[in-house]
Length: 456
Image (tube, rainbow, N blue to C red):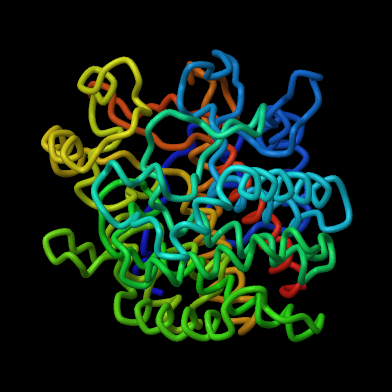
């Protein structure tokens, strides 16, 4: 491998320098030391982000951003519970700890989301399924879609206007819920089967394979590959569970086949890019596509490798851009946007925000390097080809190098959401620590352990 796809910079946290290298890969003893170090520093502790009810007990879901040394993010939209974040968090907790507290937290999280959807969103889907409500219109219809964010402390729907046209978030829930059923950690009951059937019929009714939704980043209305993949992964796995457990899918008799056929064709038409329609929003590289390769594994290895190759376009010296010309957390973002940096933007407001960006000043996010490391780890575990182990180590090292240093205003040893330019200095953004980043790094460390077991 004459040329590596990304550079490895100096870690922000000096205590991690010995682990941040390209080769040789970490030894088992080093990985054990590293895990112990991160445990002692609380780097991967997701419990601080558990939503707490009036009885001071966890309610199941997690807020997007964990409490940290500076505060608890009260008043920020990052204190909400996103389906997308929570379902990836739930999967990571179960996958890395299938017989322990991780699995218990995963079941509690997914159960809380199911309860929210059944209580507050079920009737909305029925209106769409039966042709009584059109949710494919302008912004005023977006609140009529199933909500993909709720108030985790109470389990209530958040009445504040938001862009809820995010099919990937629904797909992640369906996939994570089905994973727990497949692994017999949370078998389907009647209520949850009813919910799954509604979700499948709803995604069919809106023709999700051509639906202009907001995508992973809740922004530009387009047909996103990253929104098509999660429902497709859910359909494929749900079929397997239904066949194994011997139940009839609780939706229209041909819905699963219609979804699988159309979603699969649409996905292959777009990948390894993210957007081809509408053409004015075409995007040939987006870090959201990494999740299609890992953990969803809804693409084959060759297409996964093409996605990884395409991501070279968004790689930076710290992390990765979500996509090029992304204005969210661009240089001096808080000075330019105002008091709430996490506020939501309509399509028209996005056009104004995008004018704030100068090329090369996109924020560099910390969510993706761990997932790229995981993907290459899976490739190494399948092939024992050392080039994949080297890449797994590179992207794990980049993930570790992005852990916050002692000068971070939110505290050291945190997993940041992203680094952005404040004046001329790259600093962690306000959503630090981010639970999504924490769980992604946890999975990356777990996959490295699996790879080292293959190596030895």
